[in-house]
Length: 274
Image (cartoon, rainbow, N blue to C red):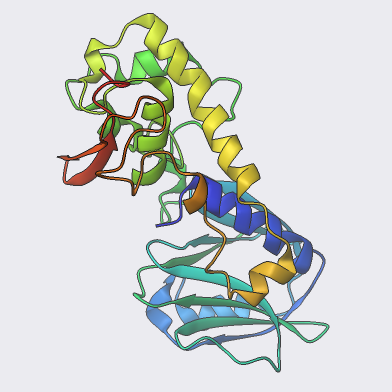
């Protein structure tokens, strides 16, 4: 599943290409992808609307329309957004097409069909997408050691699991929780309640720092993104522990180990993360 760095990368690629364009028509090939409202109403409400900007909240995209309406998109496991010329070949699992003026299309494809799209009208309360339940953004000035300690400091659950709770921290998943804890020198299996104030302070610095690092490493031009159909922009060459089970730690040479915490795999160094 794309996590915060990947979603931010896609946002930066997509926004300049659709900003100021008008939705002329929408084709929905899989109505179940439209989670709210019904697909017919979704299409009729959006026809003729102008796209103003694209923001990110956690792992969600929010397309803000001139009317004040919002399109919310979550890619889930295999979703993909592409801006393509209308006459270019479509991906096999293209489920929704926003036909825009100027001969361009915003396309949503998803092999496993877990991704979802919502339309919220101006001033409509969002009780549908789950975006209102998200915790703080890692780049929020209020994202502090005190915030983390207050929300997680009494939890007996493994710290890795806590970092992936979207109601506390928006945007971190399995990949970057491993990378963050390695950089912070904290064992992912540690109970959150066992952390010291110094460790919470370290995490409050490492979390935004690591995520920003990977956003920067992810940088890709719209042309490169389009050429790879949005599927080759990830941080694989820069990951220090995730996906490196059985390999030597880059810091100390100890063999990286894999454990299962809360049903998710976790890679760590037993020497650097005591």
